[in-house]
Image 1 (tube, helix red, strand yellow):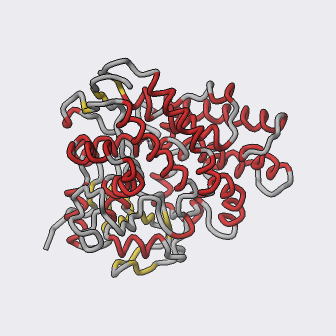
Image 2 (cartoon, rainbow, N blue to C red):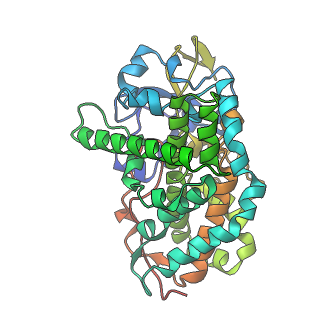
Image 3 (tube, rainbow, N blue to C red):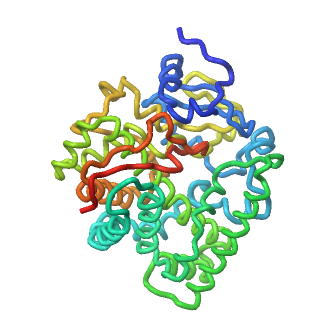
Length: 409
């Protein structure tokens, strides 16, 4: 029987670099474990595929922060007021019927049919970014491609005008990385938060004066009609700007790193473009950028797969641990681009299934296809162990991705 500390610490460079050995030990010991995050928050982590799939669809588990108990709130409400109340009431933190009402407004913008119609424009954006890379390596594929591409695509999809897109500071995305009240980085964190809040106010004001047939305009109109509160409007724009791009940036990096570690698979994917859709699903499963879900809460003491969870304690699902469960995925640690079926949980499951899944899939297919085709000899330009993984609690990715290549086509 595997013995683990209680709580299990989820922190430190070895864990962020490769969490999978720890997840394997946790799965072997049972489906639910008490864990400790760097902020001091203790939570309950669900690790196995069946347990994760069940928890993601469990209507006893709510997402609204009001369900959290005082123990959770004392450590987890990192974002200060009034920003917490103004920016944290988006879809990820809502339950029905509010979640149903709010989600209905955004789904049309991300339908597979609409995303497919925009693919030529997405390809133009990808081609332009590759054309701006150095003729030969080295280059940083995060700053040169993986960061700007998802943001440019998102701007097209939601209707963010160019003048506002040019003003967006990617550093604002770090507001989702917890920084405690006594942390030396707290002033910089709060400065990012205030900057992002002012930017959201400017987006709302612009769209109120320049309405069009786009998602941002529809959100502003919904607020003016009383279908959304001001806090819900600001929070949904916050979610779009942060959750709508950073996970895709990180998924491009994790996918490329997986391919660099498997050069035979990289070569096969480069030479067989028809393989891209299936390969993207396997890369999503193999190392998901959205490692852990956000908080869920029981409103009363409840049993979760044999563990009693106190009311208001936070329950988190490890999507990465579920996606490597050998009871669901044979040879689960192996990158198998032919894997089928592949019912991974990279986009979640249930009512909180990612509404932008079709967009993310298209972005990943275009990004990988374009980079492999136009940068022959693409390879990692530093030692694998020298990659700096981001310290974000919920996500996986690297700050930089130094690469080399023979030439730019």
